[in-house]
Structures are given as structure tokens and as C-alpha cells.
Length: 112
Length: 112
Image (cartoon, rainbow over all chains, first blue to last red; front, side):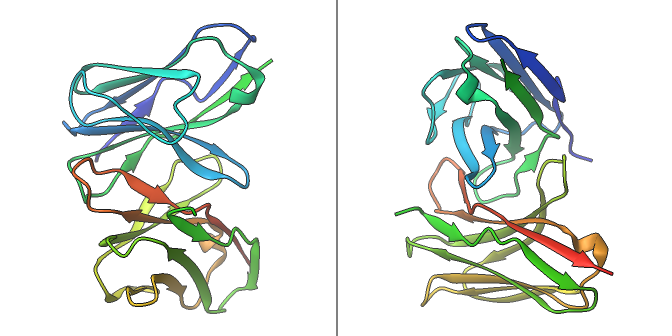
């Protein structure tokens, strides 16, 4: 079974903190993605990566950065957390283009 | 204009009903069409996957693509309470980077 594991299910952080969300996949997938999901807005792509050390901006990259030092791990970084970054964050991976994306269970982040 | 539009619902039907979920998209270059199902507090998982136009059937589920009108549908026959979830359409534009464009999701409740 493909497994995409996100480091935390629930996280509470303070405004201004630097936040790291970690994602690991065990299927040697090339592509990895970070989305946020908000009621009424659906899934919005923050960043994605199609290879180690490569990254591409998605639709809402402002306030976020990413790191992919190893193929299996893709980290999302909130440089200075703000309350409007309270959301559900979903990591996904896929083998190559036009193939199924597998999602992690999500991290519900609350910034207070 | 968003790449893909989906009515968020909510949709509430009795057990045994036929459910129709729909999305429209803007770019005729889209070639790969997917439906994801997301249960509460879980990540999305792939339900159906079609390439180009036509129908695809899997048990009680049928995915339909009409490229001439840029319209995709998911039909659920004999709906069950276990089908209660959010259904997201997803489209691949065929770029080299393998990113998906998601609809906002339709929340479906099937009551016994």
C-alpha cells in the first residue's frame, strides 16, 4: 500500500512562530504536493516538487516555503505563522504526470 | 476564470437514490479526469479515473466525460449511507509537471 505520512494530525502554533510540516512517502514517487483545504474554497495548491531540490510555486505560495532534500520527504515551512494560515494542510505524491495522487491524512493547523 | 468549477452543495439524498455530481472546466487541453472521495477528517482518495471522452463504470459508480461541452459527471447508483463524503473532481492539463486542478468538492449525505 502506498503511504503518505504527515508528521502531525493536529498542531497549534502562535502567531509569528516558524512552523514546519513534514511529509514522507514510501513509494519512490517523483512528484510531491502541498495543498491547503478551507471550507468553500476547496483544495488550493501551495507548492509542488517534481524532483529532489526542485520546487514550483502553486496558486497560493505567499507566506510559505518548501524543502525537498530527499526524494521521499517534502517539508512545508510557514516562515512566520499568521492566523489566516489556520487551515487543513494536505500533502500528496504521485509517480509521474497523469497518474493518481495519493494523499496523507492531513494536518489541521491552528494559529492563535 | 477558475480552471474547474464544482457546485459545493450540500447534497442530501435518501438511501437508494441515484446521485449525479458534476464539474465544468475551462481549458479544452485537459485530458485526464478524476474523481476523489474524501471522508470526514481524512485525505482524499482516488475513486475513478478517465482519459479523454466517454464513460467508465466501476460497480455502482459511473464517470462520464463530455469534452465537447467541457463537462464531467459522476453518477452513483443505489446510493448508500457509506457514500456520504465530499466528492472532488480533479483534472490534469497534460503539462509536464503533473499537477492536478481540483474542484471545490460537493458534500454528499445519504440518509437511511
